[in-house]
Length: 104
Length: 520
Image (tube, rainbow over all chains, first blue to last red; front, side):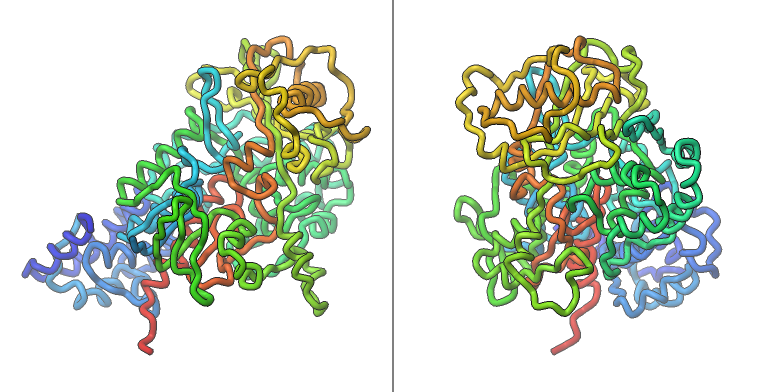
């Protein structure tokens, strides 16, 4: 309908694999958009995001919704736990994000 | 035309819900019967002046970046930056009862100190109440309904202090007479006493402009002058909306901010059975057989307001009026109930919008006074005097009208509408003076709105300013695909209304979709 669908389409046409670092950047990019006042420069990848940032369940819903909107990645709510830390995001999303292009 | 969601009402909750859905590419339309958006919190022009309806102050003030507070949550959900709200805090406000004044500000310690000073024997109880409020999770939508008065009185034994604490919370959000649900008390206590008041320089217009821009930018459709005349149901499921002009729109979801009773009416004859009414008091939740007629009557909100606006020829501060908002009662026991007469001017809210810490003094120096009023009494007044009051222009009040309220001394004989407005404007000013300096000699222009106006702006039956005393916390209406948002969902204040629209849109549309239905 709008640019979002274009983004999703664009994301699937790029052949380069998304690196782990890019997946982290994708998540951080989403968090920055949700809360521009949050300092995301020193996130510890192994620690739960919730313990470092002001993120509540509404924000996790938004991370899921943005992953879908930007990358066409579907995260069922039974899998939300895999988004707890940047490291767990990378492990969970590596296959799902393969071939996608980073959307800024 | 088929939509993912139709939203009834372009007030704060409807617009916020619309933004959420449009953001995630839902096909969404907001229907608004009026030619202007905002619902209760709207604005109008009068003789070249710009007045707000509803908004005195935005509650729930939070500084930039403050964590875990409703305002911060709201900004994140709508992708609005803190600076964009252009918020300016109050100086201080007060609760003023006979012989006792408690000041409060956005620093909770001021109120605590005032309670300790004026009610030294009650401070431990006040601290315990504060603890209980802090510990309560008002976001648990499935918590049982408790009566706030019982809980407050278990901590505070001075009835006047109890009423002084209830007074601002009731005036700014209670749909129940003389009591509140405990969760609503907690929401209001936090939003007013812990967080506090602020407003944008340009008032409610500014907030509405932000919402409209964000909604349109996200691709949402807004149809003004488009009322919903009927919610179409098939079996127990809502499937669309019929408009005043007969046009039919279909949808997977209908989110209604029209109010609980009003939404029931929109569903037509099928509604009363489908709308499972829940009585507001825990006492009536026992085993006794349910009286549906009584429950329906209890569902209709009774509290309505008049508000008068006086334009002064100088800032209120030059008259020695320092407070931003004053909540007052002329008797030690505060009555928050529908009066027998047109108004109860023995209590009220006085707002000086110019006493927020605004970067520029507003063009108009205003004093606004809100009083509890009786919708039915106002609704039955004739307009025979309209010609003598062109443009509803009221006159400034003469200082001669003074003394105590006649509100309870007998019922005013039937006056035509504009004459009644003039009379109650004068009474309202007279009863407020004492809590503020006499501003009447400085008044250059007056306007007043009544329960009729509230009815017009909100569509609420009975001009019920805060809707029904029965709240549907989960948003479920009893009809599948039809959800209650806004006032009657039960989050209060402007921030609460927006969070209501957001959380219901999340829960019933976005989250539902995020969880694929199991294959049949």
